[in-house]
Length: 185
Image (cartoon, rainbow, N blue to C red; front, side, top):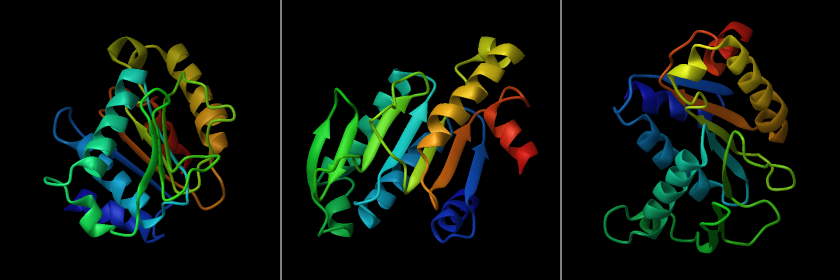
């Protein structure tokens, strides 16, 4: 409930940035996937970007989103958003367009190392899920510095004014992006 209330505050413009840090395997990413599909249904014309430490992770986010959008029995997404239609999807590019094919899709999923140039803008949500790859990266300040540069120069530079940010991670270092954001704000 606390996490869902915080996500609602993000959508209700009470927050601009939300970070959630919890142990592995408790459903953080699943909750975020449901949140993302809810936002997509509410604002299909506004592009969002989902990123993580690897293409395996972002392909998983894409797959989770597609499961919710396309399963007519378990999730009933179309019952909640009857006027919103899936018009284009690409597993190759991990993109989804709702209602109308657009220059910048409703959702683009890319790893922190993936190419973003010309691929997306971010108007609704910049969602970062486990940007730190593992223990080796989390214990290296040099690697965390490089990760921070990728986040600020690549991911964050795609944000348009008013775009919200959601960071979810199991934290292994105070120098990770969530820790730096906490110190910053």
